[in-house]
Amino acid sequence: MWKLLLAFVVFAALAVYMLSKGGDIDMSGEKHGIDSHAPAASETASAPAAVPAASEPVVAPASAAASQ
Image 1 (spheres, one colour):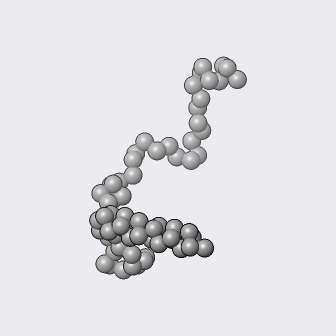
Image 2 (cartoon, rainbow, N blue to C red; image 1 turned 90 degrees about the horizontal axis):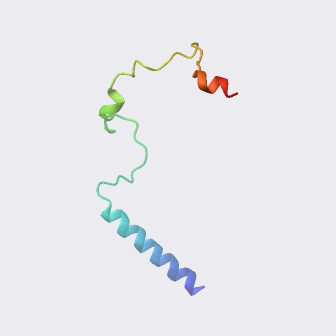
Image 3 (cartoon, rainbow, N blue to C red; image 1 turned 60 degrees about the horizontal axis):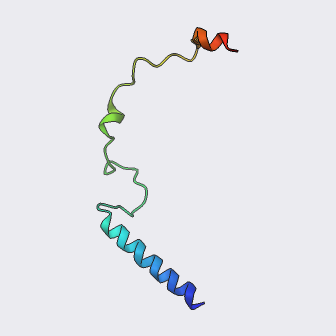
């Protein structure tokens, strides 16, 4: 029993140490207001134009079609 208690204390101390060295960690939970973080630059960029539409058929290369 004392081994379990010792392991818990060591694990808890290690977790607190790792969280303190982690930098800006917010443990307050989900945020649903204006005060939440802004989206990253990649999220605000426009969608790529090379994405095919779902209705377009996918054409396999000739070498792949011949081997089937």
